[in-house]
Image (cartoon, rainbow, N blue to C red):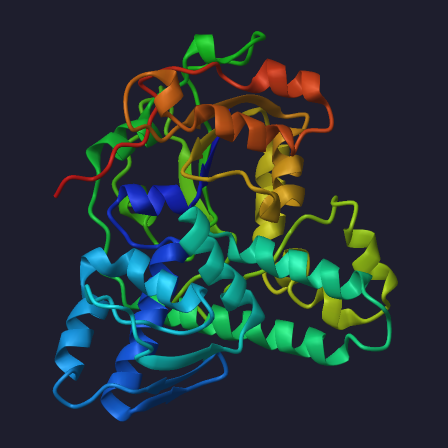
Length: 373
């Protein structure tokens, strides 16, 4: 029995890293506004921001914009009529003229303001389908703007992630990686659960957090399994493994609309085509064919942006168990995201009975704790 560990953004967040799209957007907005304050204007392919702040007011406004408590204020400022307003107790006045030129960023900012979270890749795909479904002949400019917008976001995200501090080692995570299999996690008889030939960490993030555990991991099995990782979506510091950023649900009913347009620009940011630049997908396929395996989900939301790959993992004939490490605010089931994760996972199964057989039932102790430094 092998072990396949799916590592998503929640894994980085559990290590104290500010890697969510919301953290990224907040940093981007603050950077642009601070430049407008320093120079009177910020101009880029994403924003046009003109400051109306006088010299003596500048530091006061900066303190508000850069305050850790001002997250909602900053999103509110850009979400409402693209105008940044002051936060004084007096009647708000326009302190900046701010225009968002990037259609994906505009919707992402509004999502953060209204919902408190955002899925940039889903927003991009929805906009792409909207353009493809609209009247032919008039989509050219919109499509180019959308694709250049997602490319700009990818570059900004790359730069942001490279500037984050290194994560902190978490002994709990180490123990999870090293832990042997439990008979209760499998519905049917499986090969010797005291042995494991291969532990693969499939990292969907761009960071190197899983590498904290690979170097000194001593798995608790009778034999000595191979332990390695695949950075399936690319790496921050390796040009030969470039970042893959886009959408990966070719099983979606609307995907045919994109293919029928016979315009490759509609497919530029589909993840499947990014995978051809490396042999990472082939490495994963070889692992899946090696023998029976258990999937362990650590911080991956199992959203639709990775649907094709996750379907191939979950419905493979060698998959024997799916173990979920949930996020929790308290010990009761209702205060975890376990139900949400199982709902997301269900969308990747065509054979629903197989999901019911493979997913390990909820266990309070299977959660991702926050790192305490």
